[in-house]
Amino acid sequence: MESKIFAENLKCHGCANTIKRNISVMEGVTEVDVNTDVSVGSIRYDGRTDRTEEFAAVLQGLGYPPEGSNTAGRKVKSYISCAVGRISKSN
Image (cartoon, rainbow, N blue to C red; front, side, top):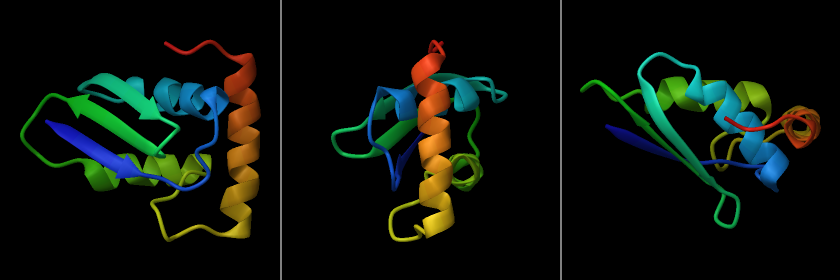
């Protein structure tokens, strides 16, 4: 299956690296693509159960909430996640 999540605060390769690193280790996830141009994450995974909400919760915890649910705190969190992603290699 595939879930697509349009997220707030998605700015650059650092953000993409953080998202890929955190989502790709989740059980059953086979591929993670992040398009910063349109602020969307595409997650492919095994199984027949829709896991969009589960993935959205992880993204929100990293500072990348679903579109329309941003807060100042989440924005600050995204800067931290982005910085970590910039100094870390993606999977």
